[in-house]
Image (cartoon, rainbow, N blue to C red):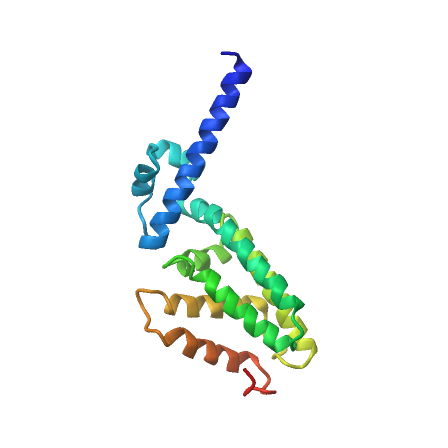
Amino acid sequence: MSPTSSSRSARKDAQYNRAQILDAASRAFASQGVDASMDAIAKDAGVGAGTLYRHFPNKDALLAALLDAHYQTLETKRQLIASEDIEADQMLDRWIDALGDWMLVYDGLPEPLRAAWSEVRSPLSPTCRQVIETTDQFLNKAKREGRARQDLTGHEIFLAALAIAWASGASTADGSTRSALRNLLKLGWTTGKDQQRS
């Protein structure tokens, strides 16, 4: 086998192993939350722990790779919200709902996201920054139209949504928790105009 053929074969093996790891991790996080064991993920993927950690040096790196696809779904929702013929506060409201859905894609995800927003070296940090920037865009539009408090930031709304997602996790909440806390958040960021409008 030529060096070039050997290199291609190694790359194909690496791509296959990465795909297997991501599939196994997706199943594990979906069924057990983000506390799923890395060793169990490696075993389910049919690879050794060394192979797993070569691809993903820690759980945050693995979560970041899996969240890429979910972030694309969130981005699609952002585009849909931005294209709707609705008031800026309604856009922000719908974005916060979409954000909450994204934060709850895996049970326990709010905690690593909370840690990542303040840790620039975290593999999850770039995604958190992107989400905060988008939240700022929706919030600033609502501010310009006089429909959101001027003293709030996208960062603060991100953390509030994160807190709601944490409290709404499968292991901590009943069915009404998220709705009640979302209403509390909305009353905190609106100016009072049209609060009764859904």
